[in-house]
Length: 422
Ligand code: SAJ
Image (cartoon, rainbow, N blue to C red; front, side):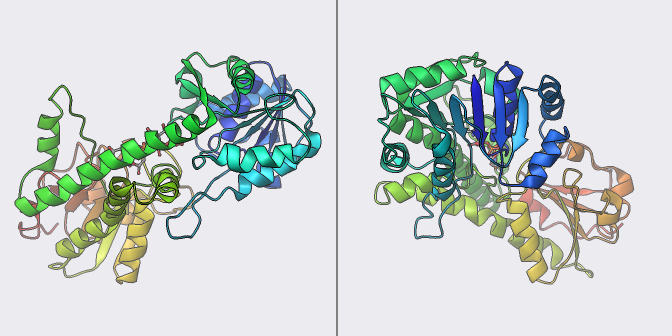
């Protein structure tokens, strides 16, 4: 098939490359000429295992070409951002989706299929996208086929999950669902779940909201345990031995363009009925402040005000800093006039090495669960003025003997321990 994929970000690019890898003629479209030039030169602009290799493969077979303008195709896939609006409930901003639809319409012909992969608010397909298409004289379900097939892949494991995850196929009509299912049937080995567009929209949002609410419960437990002087991590470990309990892990907050965004799309659609979701968002949004308060407590006794932060991305082993709690924590500590030094091996723009970031520091705060942080070598901690590590992600497994190691398990006790000078 001839395919055009609009939006070459963390979802659109892997999707375009995978369709090309399975033999389709794919034009990947992005508004950034820098991105398209890089891609046509075989270079990717995002960190994702296996992606650059696959790109070079489909460039060689000439099944993929990146462009800033759409090409006529049989199938159009829209994978553009859907940020929150700055309104009361941070509702879904569908501007980029609408622009993408209008951008392809001059190329669309009878019999074509249009698929929206972007995460969208409930009823966006029927109330926003379908009318734009039908204004052009098409009848959705008869001469144009329209579906919402939300992506569900985990950054860091995208190329595998695109093939093996179950895929929801939410058509406006049954004919739309069948057409879209045939498209994904190209490479999806997971279950194809045929549904209505509205069910697909809400299911996607509920997947991320479910995780956000469960993380909020774990974060609330961390606060309660800190107050009661009980080991939250041990409690989670023991409770999860119950056959029907899966408590998630507390941390410095919830980041990324999914869990920290998608619940609001449901909340905005039903504010009176979404109290739990709103509370969960508030709890997760409060965690950067909770971490900052712990830093203040640890630093209160220190002579110097240098603090080291390990990790700026919103989660481990990726390069994505969108909606990252670590970035918010850094900004807050900067505002409080702490001398903040940052180290993140996945963020090319950050120049300091681990040793340089630790030099003369009185506290090292681990904010992201990168594999590189499982072992904090003594060559780092020996540079510190006071060897205290506060690990908000419970990722660190090895530290030097003299290090005062703190996590959500021993937080309340640790704050009472005297300073351990280097
Ligand atoms: N986090 C915790 N505690 C946990 C798990 C995660 O604090 O127990 C934090 C992470 O550190 C991070 C945030 O939550 O800041 C989100 O990370 P994540 O690994 O949970 O998810 P994402 O945002 O990278 O990907 C999610 C996935 N959704 C689900 O697992 C339900 C992925 O499958 C989706 O495709 C993706 O959102 C998306 O694009 O919607």
